Image (cartoon, rainbow, N blue to C red; front, side, top):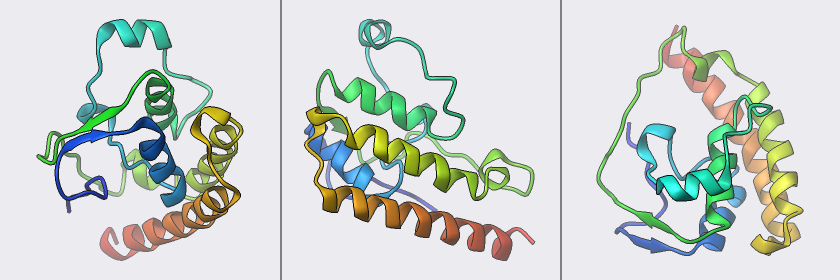
Length: 143
């Protein structure tokens, strides 16, 4: 399976649009840690990953990076991973939705992203639905 940013070609994605897309989809559309690159100097300025976040720590970091500039999307596959019965993706289960919901509230409170009530409500709904769909998929495929 291949997951891509909802865009057919590469190029610059304005920071606010990238964050809005993630929030409205209730998911990390920007990628796993192995598929995201950023300058070391920016990483030093932003600081470390937030260890209090177990599940959305990468998405939180990408959003913090986007406070300093736009994203650039390459449509080529840069990284991949597999999901099996013992992987973290399966183990987190329903906890993923709860942490994503808290993250949506955190980002929604930041005026820099100008998120509407509709953006937040849609994100809350899709975060729940995405989690249910993943749980169903894992149970169906990984029996």
